[in-house]
Image 1 (spheres, rainbow, N blue to C red):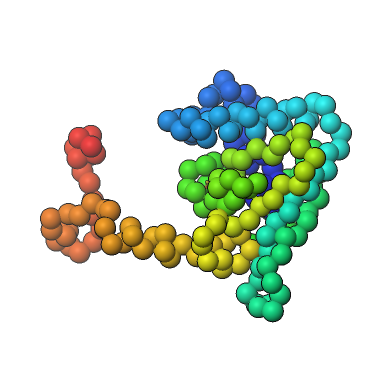
Image 2 (image 1 turned 90 degrees about the vertical axis):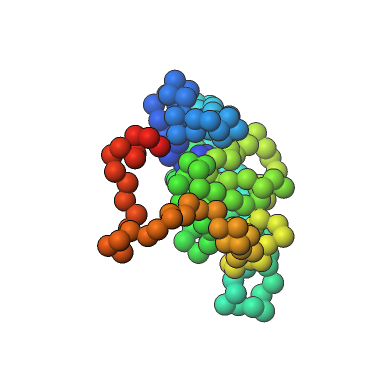
Length: 182
Ligand code: FES
């Protein structure tokens, strides 16, 4: 389950505040989330022996089209839960686990966010509700169809185009001098 640990491996650093989360440099919101998550985790580890919280997660499996989408409850002990892979039957995307790629985008308690950086509110007594991104077709559980999202990118072709392809037909290469200039 994507949110069963605060910010994945980002919080597993000796003193992330001192390191200032170099991987999140230039991303103040992500930096702030990571710091908040680290503080929340520290608070839990120091003060609480067992803290079970409820997550209600959107489930839908296209292999069983007669079963309508529903919210399934998971109860997780926040003091002992492991990183991400808690339930192999739940489908979701993730890749970098540090707030860079956006793969784990989903809606958590009404906010569209990336799950790997979203801290769990350790004080809440209400369940955390996790659903797919809104206004998108669901492929399965928290995975949405990104075709419509990527289509506009294809139409504007937002990549660098060389004037002529390499003569040997291989990949585009860059000399050391060109690397230094860029
Ligand atoms: S896995 Fe969360 S942003 Fe990449």
